[in-house]
Amino acid sequence: MYSESGELEAPPDARSPLLPRKRISPPSEPAQSNLVDGTSQVYLDGSQQIGPETAGGKKLHYLLYISHFLSTWNSRLFEFGAILFVTSIYTGTLLPTSAYALIRTAAAILFSPSIGKYIDSGNRLRVVRQSIVMQRCAVAVSCIGFWILMKGILDTPGLKVTILGILTFLACIEKLGSVMNTVAVERDWVLVVAESTTLELKVLNSQMRRIDLFCKLMGPLAIALVNGISTQLAIMACLALSVMSVGIEYWAIARVYYNVSSLQINPRMSNSARINPAGAEQTTLGSLSFYYHHPAFAASFSLSILYFTVLSFAGQMVAYLLTVGYDSPRIGTVRTLSVLFEMSATWIAPKVMARIGPLRAAMWFINWQIICLLIGTSLFWHASQPLVGASFLICAVVASRIGLWGFDLSVQIIIQEEVESNYRGTFSSVEASFQNIFELGSYIMTMIFARPEQFRYPVLMSSVAVLVAGILYACFLRKRRGHLLHMPSCMKERSSMSA
Picture 1 (cartoon, rainbow, N blue to C red):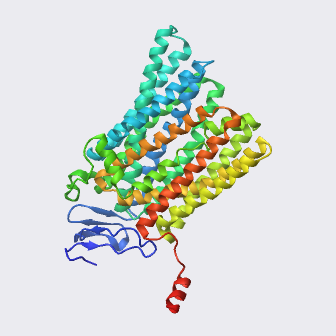
Picture 2: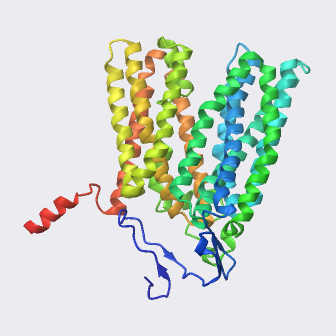
Picture 3: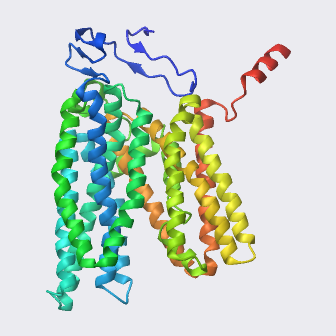
């Protein structure tokens, strides 16, 4: 259907009528078509629709997965391994480890908006390749520094402090490189690849999230097992993997770039991107203003709030479980079960979104998470023994992971479709800053309530944070759709007959 201005107007989704209508340019006439055998179609403007049977369409997503897996695996490996290395070097005190992790997180909070603006203005391939080099070089030099400290080559106190300062700086570089790679690939490349091929965006997002969750579980486990044998061996393994993977990452991401012509177009230079959205000035305050005033702000911010939690099998909750009587093998089993539930959400969420659309699906998933955690928190507070209460809490947290990651995938679809292509980096990097702020807040929360018997207060505040996120998203949904509850068709027919 064409509008009065001559633009082709995309019809609203019958299952998700609340998404705003998008206007797309009239299609160019194909200069060359191979659609008879289902391969590809090339337009006069040089763009190409890659079909499923071409080498590009069939293998393209695998190359993207390989690059993303190596980037995420190395990042998770180093993130956890570095804490183990610092702890092994500086025994008897947690100060160096805490300072190392705190400064690394603070760097992500402060500099992520600048990273986002660079992503939006730079060449897509150059941005991702620079992120790869930043990560790998920082990890390689850090491993050399850790090895020097472990061997005691420079054992004077002044030099050890200096090296630790350098290692902390390199950790900041690695973290910013990871943010750059994640934002560029997950929030921009994935969408462009989905638009340029026959692959569904939901499928690409789900597979990328499975890779994230696999690396989240197996990366720390792998480096911890090697570190149990020898810390020096773990350092060398981390160094070797980082050096060996950089060439493969570099090659794989380039193949994707050169096979998708749309990736080679800078959004800021395209005719459709010349208008600067209100508040998107090239300053940090401008980025914050743009993020706050964007229509997708409430959905994005509700997702960021979920990072203010101790209800995950991370350091705080694991430490509490150890104090109440759970041993490491049981915690490892529970954590594996949790990841399996999380990965199941990557299959459930696309099916739910296909039936009711991402807007309503996100509401369903966040409600499931709220229900699970409120029940678990209530049972935890009223349990007669800490071990019993911890068991109730474990069951609730494991069950809630389906809601968490289903909500994450649904909101990601909303953000990818609604944020302007030339400002995806700016929007997503500010979102990443808020996620790091809330994550930092969760650590501060357990520093204030540090005793095991006080863990109930962080648990309660974490559940309240999820409830607040649900309310904020409900307001977003109500504003977007005009209502919250979707009346069944049978009830609509009955009300129309009575009228």
